[in-house]
Length: 321
Image (cartoon, rainbow, N blue to C red; front, top):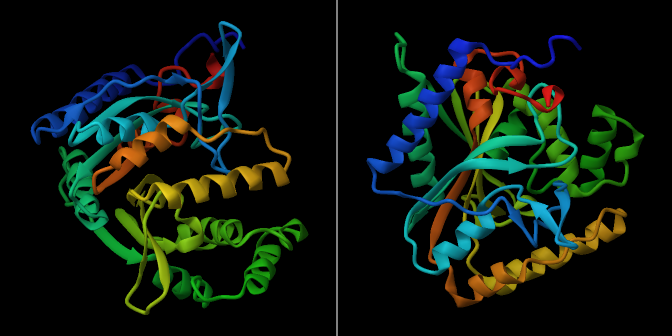
């Protein structure tokens, strides 16, 4: 414990982190994307069944540290902000480990009038610029649909497979506790345990996620006529780095998804979370067609530094606080 007062990051890496933050801001400023500064403490939070917020009290009233700036940014978009980005802190409870910290730095941005593939191209441009600084080789960028990479590894089409088959595969991959899990959770487990380790090095985009994992993304039919979500994730050397959507603008559909999540939270005895009605009012007023993405800056720095732990990519991780 005697050395726990010291930062986890090396001093040379601390300087590199500072340069990275400046480079990220410069990238968007050169493209006339407006930087916005939104609250990290709010009265509402996400209903997502897989994310736990950190709650607090403010003058006797309940509040939450924000898991991302998304809801506030969408309120700005609905108010007419145009293209925006936010670079700041986000918080998630029960997330601690080699790649996780309950407090982390998140880069999130939205492009009005773009689709998810245009946004993937910009993510690739950003990471390529950062990864190729002083490098002799160019960053390899790969795009794969969720269905094709899942089927190539596990031999099963994730969009059409029966839930019983996925549950059995999850049991075999983990334990009997998965015998009655949801389709979304089984797919998530199988992808993380079996598919992610097989992804090629470099920057890999996985798109057209299963419809059951749509979250805040639009739904669409793929080339095979299957219903998929217009969502993508980016992996940098097999590490999950970013999550993006062709954003859902239909307020009725979004409320239905939020209500389903609150029901799921209740069924699993998780803390109750009310739907953010200010976000819903913004969606009711009209969210412009846009694509958005959130990128973990600490994980990006881990890859650029070839660090083994997120503790080496930030000044003070939770274990040092």
